[in-house]
Image 1: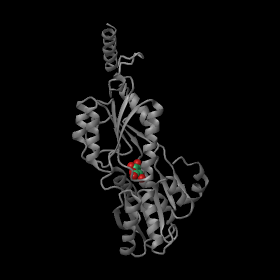
Image 2 (image 1 turned 90 degrees about the vertical axis):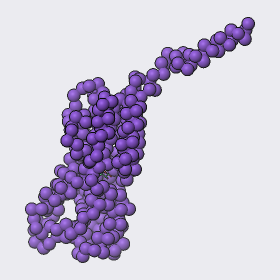
Image 3 (image 1 turned 180 degrees about the vertical axis):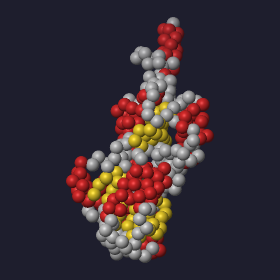
Image 4 (image 1 turned 135 degrees about the vertical axis):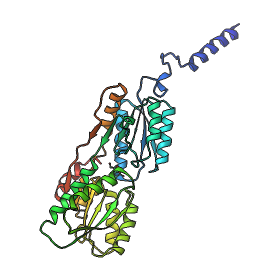
Amino acid sequence: MFRRISALIAIGAIGMAMTGCGSDGDTGASSAPGGGDKLVMGFSQVGAESGWRTANTKSVQESAAAAGIELKFSDAQQKQENQIKAIRSYIQQKVDVIAFSPVVESGWDPVLNEAKRANIPVILTDRAVDSADTSLYKTFLGSDFVEEGRKAGQWLVEQYKDKTDPVTIVELQGTTGSAPANDRKAGFQEVIGSDPKFKIAASQTGDFTRAKGKEVMEAFLKSTPNIDVLFAHNDDMGLGAIEAIEGAGKVPGKDIVIITIDAVKDGMQALADGKINYIVECSPLLGPQLMDLAQKVVKGEQVPARVVTEETTFTQEQAKAVLAERKY
Ligand code: GZL
């Protein structure tokens, strides 16, 4: 008889455990994406290609934790097909909201339409898409890359305003087809294009990485005589180029003027050391704003179509003054 009652109690206990109706009253539903009391975000990150990206990932992960948001995170290793797979997986898991930084601008409509049909709101962060259908995402949070390119061009025009000799420029572009590469190039060209002394003699992608930046700069140094200026779309490619320039027996920051974009720690150190001449800031610390936008969007609240981040620029002297307090 005891065994029978024990058995009945045991079966009851197992039954309760399996339905999650444990003593703490937990229904178990909170672990189900999108159906519980915790907001669940699916985030597809570009990759881990640069110091900027590492800082951006840290900001997103720390901000999700601080906001009590369950973050499903994937690293696409700079491949669009991996981002599309991740977004499809988040749709199947019925997350509450999807956020991602599109590695390139084009080719997103099919998967974003799938998210729309599943009634899962999408937030673009860091990089934008070129889709004509803006109903496919709720908002874009990130920098004005065209303005970043303009700032780089404006500094160069100012530096050479009293000179008439030709200025030979080489350009290390970001990832081909990405919004920052397209827009930084356009903004820079818009400003220097008005003065014929500026000539971009060579322009090629370094894919936002140090290694590729060094490799392409080595090729530029062989193919392009008398380089005066390097414009690199991010610090990491600029830092790789510095290795190539020093390897060629030239002095970075003096024999070749270097302008980069991001202002990550290693870039700011090189700026303070005189190896880079000017950096346009591009903030990776998008996490807090992203989580705030996600909570509003999930509640159905109106949010701005675009949230542009606040950014500045740094000279060598300014870098020396702020280096110690930089967060990334
Ligand atoms: C810009 C970001 C770019 C950075 C690079 O918002 O997408 O990608 O400038 C990073 O450092 O790799």
